[in-house]
Length: 242
Image 1 (cartoon, rainbow, N blue to C red):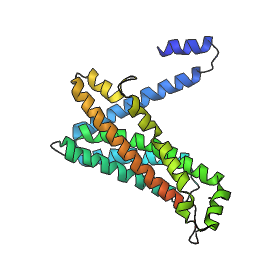
Image 2: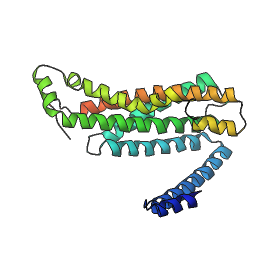
Image 3: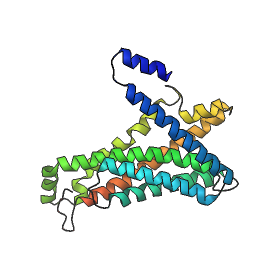
Image 4: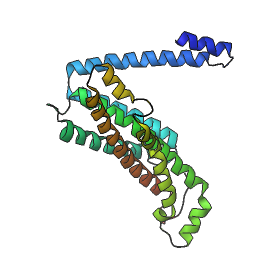
């Protein structure tokens, strides 16, 4: 199929041949490495290895989101890391301990997939919301300073921009929730169906995951935008653009 896609790109002069080859190679390599690594983790069933793998995913998600928001903002790495860590830990812990209730809390069958799914979603939501807020504040200096001069607090002067950023960060999740099950099936549910799991059971797991994602995404964007907004003001409540 990839060979046909490359052939079509060549005949239509789309210049996507190198991109397709590169993307295909990276997909195969990265997923094979992930598969072997997960096989080792599942076999050993060691809580240190399981948590260590999730921390590695968290670190990568932090780097990706931070790079999109902007490296020049003070304490951006710690802010993004802490926000994603808190929301992911809270949502996954609640789901595993109170809802799924496996025999051992660190069961890789549940902890790794749930953690990875939440991390992927909150990384995107954090990057979108953070980038939107930074861009809005940077482009609205005169309006913000006008609000400050009229007696508004720093948080009041950027409240509208922050609310808009949070809504933007939630758009991918809420959009998918609106059409889930109507326009195609989500990948997790499809994978469960392919493995032979009962359709209603697979649907129940997907409902649980979608509710987890919207909670974790909202909480993360709230924390990140709150922290980012503070970075744009000094102790004298004066606007500063990093």
